[in-house]
Length: 64
Image (cartoon, one colour):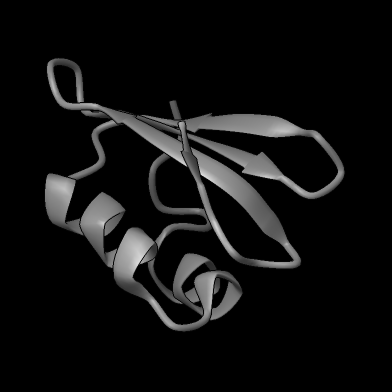
């Protein structure tokens, strides 16, 4: 897991072999997302606002 500087998202990890991403939120809740392209994970890591990127590019799009 990569620690992130965000009030909403504490950490994110990516398993390229099965394209799953785990996101740990500030309330210590961890959610798993499936069939995530690697560029989406990289985008989250590089985003200025992790929360805005999550809302626009991940939320509701990669259910397992």
